[in-house]
Each structure stands twice: as structure tokens, then as C-alpha cells.
Length: 153
Image (cartoon, rainbow, N blue to C red; front, top):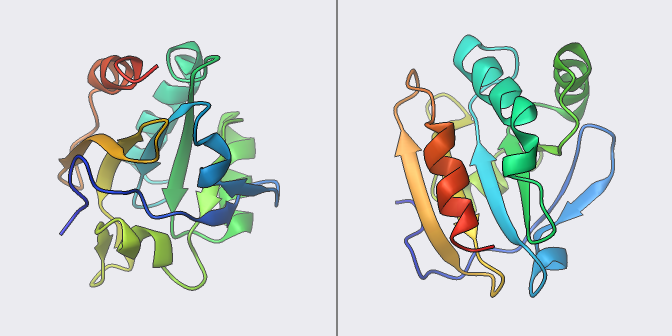
């Protein structure tokens, strides 16, 4: 069951496509965070979504908001994906222990070993402020994602 609005967001530290640590608690009190869980690097829908976020990064990365995307792909896959498509916001690897963060947020599909297509806004207090869950083949509405993140700016 995915986390609900008002739930405390589980803390985590994951490595991004450059091997740098991303720690959710580093944003507490400073920025709202849009966590974008996506199933697979290099897949059609995920590529379209993440390049869409890239093209509209100013809507998501501001003085009071930030974005990070999470999949269970290994760090080196994330790096190749980011390099190919010019994605420079954090792509976080939930590879090992496999899907631990995705599981903590209630969005790991254990059958496929990948996260569901889910987004969470974590407010400055570290609570889930908003979430949405799309079917695997259905892309996120980026306008909705930006509007919901702005509510917590």
C-alpha cells in the first residue's frame, strides 16, 4: 500500500547517476521534494517523462523545491541513461538492497522488481503532502506534478 498524505516520509540515502549521495533529510526545513518513482531507464514512457521533466526543470528545481527520480536500475545504467538524454537532475539507484526505498514508499512491484509509476511531494516537514500513481503505460501529467509541487514551495 503506497504511503498516504500526512504520512512521515521514510528517510533514505541513495546514490545518483554520478555516484553522489542524495539524502532526503538534507531537504527538511529547506525545500519540498518531488520524488518521481519510475519503472525502467531507457523505456519509452519513462524516457518521455524524464526528458519532459528535464525540459521543464525550472518548474521543479527552484529555491524552495527540488526533484529526484528513483528506479531500481543500477547506478551505471542511470549514468548511461542520463548521459544519453542530457538528464542532469538526480536519478537515484534503488538497486541494492533491491527496491528498499521503493518498498518503504509502498510502490515496489515485486513481480517485475521495479517501482510503480508514482510521484510523491515531500513537504518541508518531511511529510507526504501529495501523491499520484499511474498505470505502467500511462505517463504522468507534468502540469499536475508542477502545480502540486508549487503548493508546497
